[in-house]
Amino acid sequence: MSRRVALWIAFVVVHLGVAALGFAEPNMPMGDVYIVYEPWSSSALGGDGIVGVTESWVYPALALVPMVLTHAFAWLGGYTVGWALFVTGCNALAFWMLVGSGRSMGRTIAAWFWLGFIALLGPVGVYRIDAVTVPIAIAGCLWLFGRPRVAAALFTVGAWVKVWPAALFVAALIVARRRLSVLIVGLVVSVSVVVIAALAGGITHVLGFVTEQTGRGLQIEAPVSTWWLWQAALDPLHASLYYDSEILTFQVKGPLVEVVSALMTPLLALAVAAVVALGAMKVARGASYARLMPPLSLALVLVFIVFNKVGSPQFHTWLIAPLVLAVVLNRHRAWPTVVLGLLCAGLTQLVYPIMYGEVLAANPAGLAVLTARNVVLVILLVVAVTQLARVPGRRSAAAPVPAQPEPEPAPAPVPALDSDFAPQRQPEPEI
Image 1 (cartoon, rainbow, N blue to C red):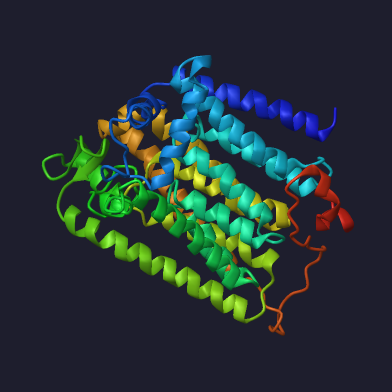
Image 2: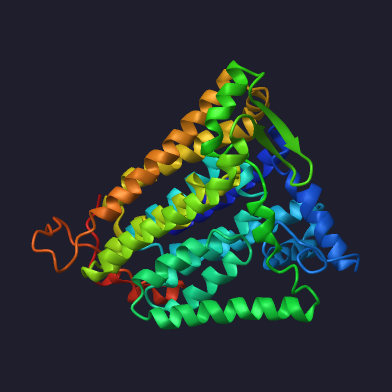
């Protein structure tokens, strides 16, 4: 059996299994799909109001598009099944681009990693809007080196579905040689979205997702909330968990929560600025794309997670694209972050949906798993930043010579272009 056939069989098995787990595991891991996505999209199709246009919304404007498109598959088994099929179809397109002819060992390992991550993360990685942005981001990463304008458009579209691909856009803007082109494409796509929203009568709501996020409290899964969670377990008179019915999530309540919540957005901005400055310094010193882009993009995505006051479990799907890119470009250096990423995914599924009842009850067992996951996240961020800081520049006399040839990035979006992929011209060293 060829590598490619084995990968596609595994793709089908993993997606079927994870989709089925959504119906089998506790705490409704696919609840967002039929509780909020279906009503929002049905309302838009029925002319009863369009979220993001006739009212402010927690998501960017383009998030409604996949929710509406899912209705085309609902006849196969209902809206929830239709959503799983839609996400699987999107993943299949990006998986096809990644695997190509199956001759590249780096791409093959990256594909196996992606499937492993999906299996470990579980149904929350499928039954959330974030799942739609993952294949968009992977496609952008694969196209960035050879087609930076296409990649910039994909990252921008992804950011108008769920904000996080903006981290990849920023990384691309730093490392790309044609930065002005990348910036112009991003602006054109964004202006187009705003203009369409304005023509639909929603200019006053198109940026509503920004204010909706900045005004919320600390969600229980966010790393910053760990202190109050343990306080709720050990001293429930001073801290507790509660359900916010407006944004449909559980948050923490206790001393200084409001102050810390107000500080998180500025802290996130400062952390992003620090990583951007480090990346720009590496570019100024002549760092190569293949060495710089993986740790830079991963560090920026992790900053979006670690310093976020929301912390939803589906946020961990954001790790897939930069880690896939790291494996494709240089799998020998990627293994520490890959292992930590997979550990994050597995712990996240334990937290939600498997042990979510224990977490909500402030049970020490559930909080211990959640705390371990958050600690691994922070360690992964430290590792990513450390790797970024150690990226050598061509102008550094002390830069070490790699023991093995490093494959240059030349993403091939379709199998027919595999011959243009650098590792095909210069065979990769086998593990």
